[in-house]
Amino acid sequence: MTETREPVEELLDAEWRADRLALRLNTIRAQRPPQLSHQGVLDQRIAAWSAELVARRAGNLVVVGDVGVGKTWSVWEALDRAVRAGWLGGFKVATSADWQDATAPPVDREQLRAMRVVDFLALDDLGSFRINDWQRECLLSVVDERWQHGLPTAITTNMRKLSEPLGDRLASRLRDGATVIALSGADRRKGR
Ligand SMILES: Nc1ncnc2c1ncn2[C@@H]1O[C@H](COP(=O)(O)OP(=O)(O)O)[C@@H](O)[C@H]1O
Ligand SMILES: [Mg+2]
Image 1: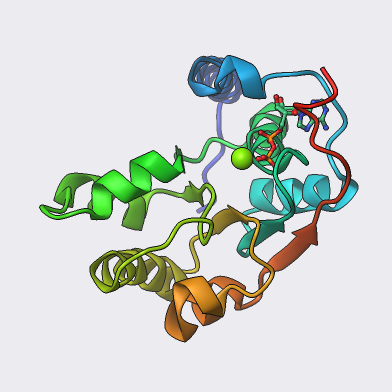
Image 2: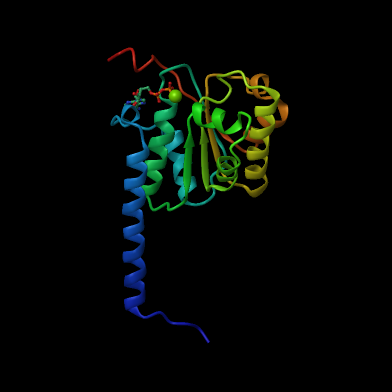
């Protein structure tokens, strides 16, 4: 027997979803730092990746470029855009201080667990700082588990060759099936 849904149920579902999306958009905008909230145009390739996130088909995203070209801004903008398009996934944008804190002994197990399982994780400025073997192992456990479960991870970095700062095991999991976008241009912070 096929189940038929009452129109009122459909309506309630749609309302519930709209409420959740509005809440999620508020959450993202409250967490997004003011200095990364400028209005602007998102790189088309990153916009396409954002649409993949909404369709639950997104792989990893690697945003490479020099300082100030808009790497971190692009990650936030891609998330904002995904929510506006109906994405309700959980997300975490970890600054370099966040992920360095979480991986410095004694490790923050709760944070690391959250980073392993959240629907979307961004690790900002990965590879731009020297990481020790201990931190590399911690990050590897996060990235490996996400890779095994096909959960998308984005990184921003100014290093073109990821395996140098991160090691082959970490770099290869991050690169696997990833959309790699090189942003170029001037340091936007200097032009103000
Ligand atoms: N496409 C854009 N349009 C408008 N402002 C932008 C854009 N990309 C970046 N910015 C702004 O430029 C500054 C530098 O961007 P940021 O993402 O911090 O660069 P990066 O992470 O590459 O160092 C930030 O204040 C950000 O809000
Ligand atoms: Mg940045």
